[in-house]
Image (spheres, rainbow, N blue to C red):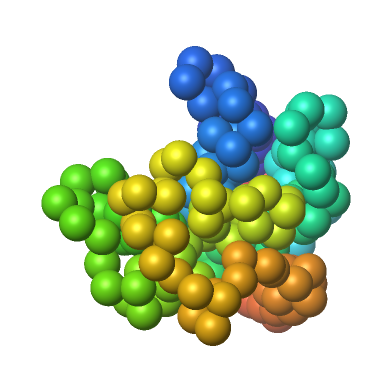
Length: 199
């Protein structure tokens, strides 16, 4: 367990290095990796130590300048981690972690196709894709104006997305619900005797 814990901790904090050092970059990286990290730790879901990564990440966000609401940001990251852990506790942790990383990356890249779109999606589709993006969810939970961020403003055509389609405001209630669901599913999973004895 110790090795996996260190790897997961470092993976979540890798956004602090290089080009991800900006506050939005740190949040984006955590959004992409949180569910996969939680899934990987799913085999130890009943151990309190398995919840160390989101606590350390929350402390990191609290001391990161430029994040208007680090508490809400931490809550959304912890919710993604908890959902991943819940899935990893029931299914194969390795496969679930890989699937979670693929899904998070796909949903996050979809609004702009990674910046490769010749022209933005229609406003309705672009708004729906932004709603489904983990990066958008975490950034907007932190009260960052994601729709006006240079990474998506032109590429996703957010200037054409009116308030009737989306406002960019996120409620902390969704994060709380996901966090509770993830915790309950983790606790309800049948322990894996061999892996727990290894821990």
